[in-house]
Length: 265
Image (cartoon, rainbow, N blue to C red):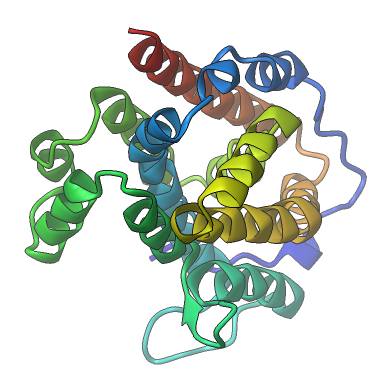
């Protein structure tokens, strides 16, 4: 278990170059994949890949929780109550968000339900969870669950960052690597599908709305502030954060390329 971090002890004159990966973000915004998701069939195939991004996001979040809050017994207060509060707010939203009927679910569970209602294949992701619950190693579970190979590679990249044990790397991956660039083209096709077939697609539309509400409007500013404070004026940490951002965005582009090739075949 990593020692808890006290962010308030770090200097605040920071200069993380948030523009160092703008070229990669632009490649994602303009990616040809979005133009290929033009039907319910294509959207289902996209979801069958993307669900693995939604799943491993939760492991990134749990890794952050272990670093900024106390998740062991006996409980002791971590040094930075403000950071603890911010991380726990994100955990609350991502692990137990409010649903329209008053119940609660994680965003991953909401995504799975969206896939089921839309008729997407959830077999491989359920097999992955079953293998992990049975205590099987992650690497073996990924290779045998039937996940798309590009999704497996993406998840492996994420867990390499987690396994680094470096708090700056993990927080940068969470902050910049998961800024899902959702262009209007993608949002419009989801809205169109939901209007045509609400029983199948309204849940996914709700997921997307919650994603935008939480990740874009609330979580992104929180994470950027945490990362800036964690890096302080340390040029090595700032460089590590920028390097990790690029690595994560490059991994997302490789995944998008693979899905586009699958849809275009």
